[in-house]
Length: 366
Image (cartoon, rainbow, N blue to C red; front, top):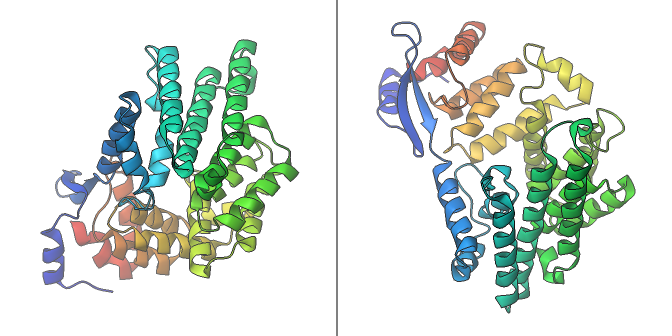
């Protein structure tokens, strides 16, 4: 596809939604039109809404947010995901007075749960408590390698993971209608070291009830990483494929989940190494990966992050058709938060030189 000059001028004149235009690069050398995406802003605003809702016991506000769980942000995330992410976000912890903070939030979440008559909302509060307990566990453990963790740190970690598992066990049966119940249970499985048979059983039940909930597949693949509970470096991928094969959903949705989950393991994994080597190493289906990632990027093209991701992986795979498709989605927008400095722009120059048919697309933003 070649854009006419009038089309290019029209595209240049309009900044996309959820983006702030910047000028980067040396004049006369790069001079790209670049955007710092602001599509996180709505998510960050909701972070504050939810944290204040808990800390100030504004339970009606929390209930109203729960009613919107299935709505999505420009990034493609659902409000359900962002809600629970807040409670499992290590950076949300007030490190100045952590114990006081832990007590306040756990007590307030418990009060919210007990004040509700609707068992489904009680379940949401209990899943949130479980996620917060997992967060507390990792706060005490720290992010170092296992041999650097002290006995007292391990004790606090184990105690809070057990409390998180107990919170899920004590949740009303309606909690299982929320797909994040299973995602949280799979996260507990990683930390507690559930045996493989038990974790497979959890995943089978999860997929049977919520086959198209993407975070389930990410959590299960995480459990199967070799550094956690996988026996080989390919277990995370083999388990992902098996879970998707057992799920009832459209082929397009299946491939999207495959593309997004694989992308999380591929990002930054190979540096200058050809992507094809990495595909072979893990047994990744390149066509399925790029097709699924491309579909997800197309659906969420209002955000620059997914077209950026798609372009990066298409270029690393040296797949011209997907490079062209990704450039069309980027539409001259290159995310300065993701690609700092000029190294990314040098990569874009390489794309234009390697694939002449992409030149008009690559330089759309100049």
